[in-house]
Length: 182
Image 1 (cartoon, rainbow, N blue to C red):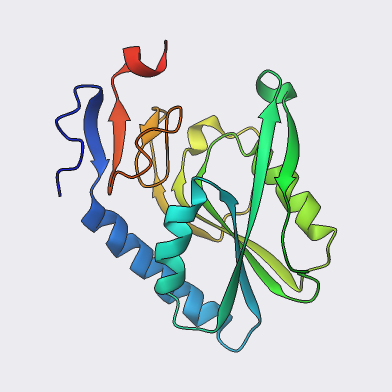
Image 2 (tube, rainbow, N blue to C red):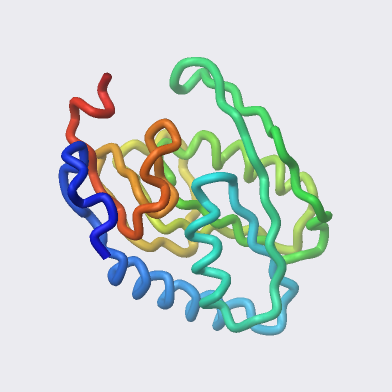
């Protein structure tokens, strides 16, 4: 599928849909092996994480539930504050929680969310990310399931966006610098 490839703002495809699908299937298999017989709930942050979560949960051949959070960040850089704008619908106490992220960058937001979730006393709490931009990491985070390490570029597609655009690309692409630096 060549969705949006003719868009001159896209620099290049970093990860094809086939590469993503293969990695998601591999992550799903590893999760099945680790969580068989457990009470698993997958949690993601809207909106970007929805795309990865949908494919990942279909690759996990176990009973599980899904839940969602939404957040807003405000303030500059490392001093930014995170506010939960949509909380979980169901309690997680005593359940095995897998936080599903589309991309981890500085790790500050995820670090905050992990603290919030730990306070709710899950049986376990782990992280699965499709994309890891670890070159920008500001906090140490244990990532049990990692799809791809990615370069320090602005990425779009497969849930990632710029001003709400390009989430629906079936691949992950970079944009020309002048597009996102505006």
